[in-house]
Image (cartoon, rainbow, N blue to C red; front, side, top):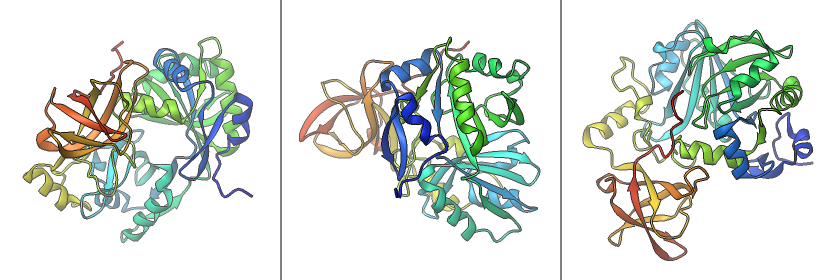
Length: 368
């Protein structure tokens, strides 16, 4: 009996050629065809991801808003029904518990989408601080989540329901009770690839059927099933943070470059506000930068970064970019070193390899 967690789609992975790896205690596909091919499909056509390992925590009750304002760094009062918002949840120290999405389903009714590796930790943290009149429910096992990403995602959805009005779902918006091939889904437009696309939240029992129908409908458009490998290279090129790399208990949202999701001026105090305010006032000690290798070598997570022989930080994510055909990385370094075009060194297998500081995001989709 395996102790690994599995999504409702696990039994289909083999059928589609999935190569399975252990991802934080989950059996998940790293790729189906190749990371490069899947990455290219999302940038130019469309790709379908199983992201059912992500967590869903329901928050409801008359004090829901006040509770979430206390727990989250963003201003939850700004979300309208049918809207989504990116936020962080912090410790008193300013370090990050998790980064997450908040969906407003109705008045005093929210759904938090949290990282798979943090589901139990997040739920315990929220429960510990729930002094208000709120009801918290971990619904993660009830939901499956598919992500259809890429410029042709819209066309493929319309084949599954010709009457669907995707135009009325703006970026960071969603609609409940949408029908796709007769199955009810919550359809949202947030994405984690730098491309347009949709997330389909459905019941676990409908996941396999929807997966097959989407791939069948998108065959002409060249849609591919995609794994964690392409998901990582796509989000990395778009400079979207990954918990455990760009964010952690030791890295604040301000240091990680997601200060746009930290509203220090909202009226309510939130956990970590004091520490983050001090960081902002005194100047953040570290900053996330983009780096491009000048010499041969690929920067990997955890590799140390130096400037004139002095250690200044470390790489959080790095790879050979499939889109840019360059070795690039993100690194958390001392703020004074975060100067564009600065030459630095990355220590790769005991040798200093030259790199320079470059602007991020590395990739931005062309405007239609």
